Image (cartoon, rainbow, N blue to C red; front, side):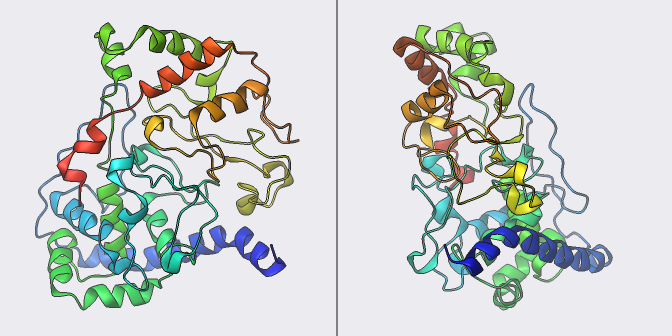
Length: 350
């Protein structure tokens, strides 16, 4: 990696975040004066039992018109510089809103540095990107659009392109009571993404009274997952199966992608990445921020041996000495977190 690219990779999240927040702040100031909702019918969304509340910013309350606009934008390649890729190109419903690639592929076939994360249950996340560099879904939405390895577009030019579309202008007026602008684009995208909620896996049915929903192997795996032996639930607690912490799990001895360090520039943050939720994990291989572990067997074995021993490695990452039988039970339980509804809901389809 050459030096200019390395500097860009370290500073880009902070530069992008400051730019996004500045744009959104300036637009939201004028937007609050301009907003006169035409269609304010609420979007019906049900928070699953035991899940936390969704924090929705003032001015972007969920309505049917906003979700509809966000969905149209999400699946429209108009968001990329050459109109070749949409958000849905990398976040496919059939793959639980991932793409099954090691790392993402952007415009002109550009290979990105990171694995595409699932968007299911993203509404509950307190921050975004693997290094935790974005504080909201609204701010995050612009990241892929402007990133060189993804859509490689410019916010101002995108806004101009969409503003020239009469249908988009009409939808913007219906959803936000204003003309098409950056505030509308990122707010609508965030609105659609907040509807992607999953909580109907065999695990969910089992803990809600249907003991037959999980197999004996899955029940054994559940006990092992929540045990002091593995401590899996310390970082992946129910119901979302993540505590949203940013940790180093000893994936590498030397990290090219330095993770959280790109935001803080603190050496103790090298190799730290956001703890992912495990729901639907059986559908989202390969795994880790760089897609370097191809299967759940490889993931379990990584934790079983205790990682590679990086100096910032979390103390809970230690040898587990699991038997082959225990490894299979753990994997069986992880498959019990698969919600087939995610693949079938027509309201999430293009």
